[in-house]
Image 1 (cartoon, rainbow, N blue to C red):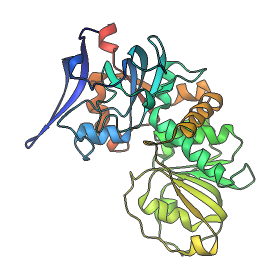
Image 2: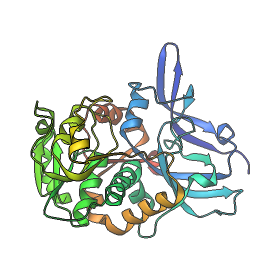
Image 3: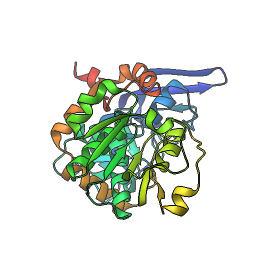
Length: 335
């Protein structure tokens, strides 16, 4: 296929810092992989915010389009798995870090990295879910694999107003769990109740000094924060409960007692969403398409253009973004 011109938000790094702007490029610069995709939407995740602002060492190439996920339509394919016209979704695999990212109107990737667009979702909705929602689904599946079932005891979600937290609240509530949402933004209580939270608690509940073991409360937990929040959360986990830990916005290190683990049998389960094996990847997307209501998706979603990404990236790294930000990479093109 002859080369095409497309727009992308590019971060160019050198010893003096980094330059972030939209560029017009030729498709000749894309990787020589099997499937060429016309990207429709990406999403803005915390990791993308670190990449665009330069606050984290995320990008492994000096000239790179960030964006760790995307959804779009296959233009051409050298793989029998996909054909032109197929609608696909991608999360993970180092896209937007080591591999050209989703803040781009075109991308070329290996067929094995793609997932067919789940039935019941359109391309925009799939990115309203995106990496954050995919991670939330993996957390719920991990807790259920540890034996979590709906009961009178509560399940807590930390960082509940963020992207992963919002989807986790909605998924758990839909599945019949009594969900408690922890947040530092108590003004978002109404939003979290609309997603299905039974009660809202201040995040300070988990960061105050306490005994190595507190009163049992939580049957399970999705922790998107890390740091002192995770340490405090462990103290009040119930016997034989589990915590699915997937984030570090509150710190990459924590100090905790071994007592929750050796006296209550609490399990700390790490959840990553980059190199997920195919069967689990498909199971998570099927769960999202089946159980995450479209109304919940709409409540938590804002759509922006590529040009707005830098300002929103700053906000997401400061914990100022509610829910999910979808990036319409063709917004300017349509106007």
